[in-house]
Length: 432
Ligand code: 4AD
Ligand code: MG
Image 1 (cartoon, rainbow, N blue to C red):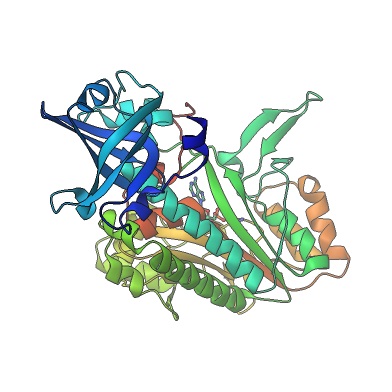
Image 2: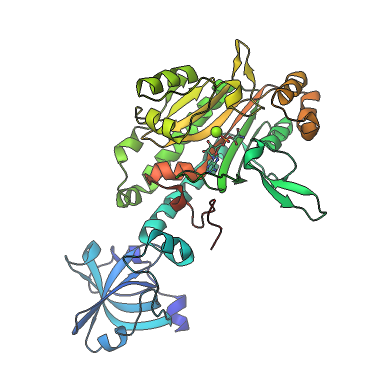
């Protein structure tokens, strides 16, 4: 048995490239079993694919007892068969059960809630496995992009002392010394501190939001790719965002065409993602919404409904810029030509998906920052170190945050953020 485990194992995907008549050994988990009396079919999966194995008498005696999701090693002869999924199967002459599985709890009619309760097992599904492979490509692509473009990867704390994105979604944590601290909503302020030495920085880390509403696009713990650039403004980062998203989508099409097809993703919609993306002002967005029967009072941010209506009208991502001051967090720089709006932009994914990136130019003058903190009813003393950065060689700078799970949701074309991540954390779920 030791030898079989250590050597001579063929990844299942590779079996389809092997000539008929060759002896192979595969290992994996039992995906499906069909008993026809004189024949038993066991479909086995590993991380690379699935294949049908066929057991004839007397091998059927051994195959009979093998339950769904048992881990097995199977040897046999490769044969072409049009009826087999993928056109090849293995006629088995050896099976060994490594870990048995009796009464695997997932059946075809399992409810969505039940599957979430046993997520530690349901993550084995073909659909989720496919999504997680695409997620892997997307994360790799973000790192590739930033490294190729001269950014330094940095790491910021998750325990913080004051809100970045407003108090309503802050998670409180009792710290070791008995004081109250919070889980970070964004690494932005720390990235801003790091541009004074590294100039171009990025991080991919969790961010936490105590989101009280149940929606299809909110997690309480999500993965956030954030970048910050010294010596730059709103237009510069919009260009970076456009190039980043294009790079990621292209990489996914290159590496995961089969997976996207399996999920039923509209490939044309992704092939259409290249610069320039659309750019509309907040005011123009309000007009489009009004024509569609949605009246948003000037100054309000958009919700999921508005973004769905808006982005259904675009065939590639769209930037919305010039958001009103009160619709965005306090750190955004106001537009010098029109002080009631900010030099901010959201990037919305098309096809109804909505916001995937928020970003903009930051306030670089101490005086302006303190004034705005006060206008927002916040206390300058809570933001002392952040204000301090403006005293020592401040420079114009800008940055953005990309919601990785939302990006995965759009690229894979799925309808709920929960399935973009193996163990989702939402208002109702922190288990398993
Ligand atoms: O628009 P947000 O709140 O912007 C910031 O946090 C900035 N400080 C980022 C920066 O400039 N460095 O969040 C950025 C993105 C959103 O566009 C969205 O994609 C995602 O983070 N996001 C969430 N994703 C899943 N669940 C949630 N609860 C999310 N909240 C925000
Ligand atoms: Mg936002």
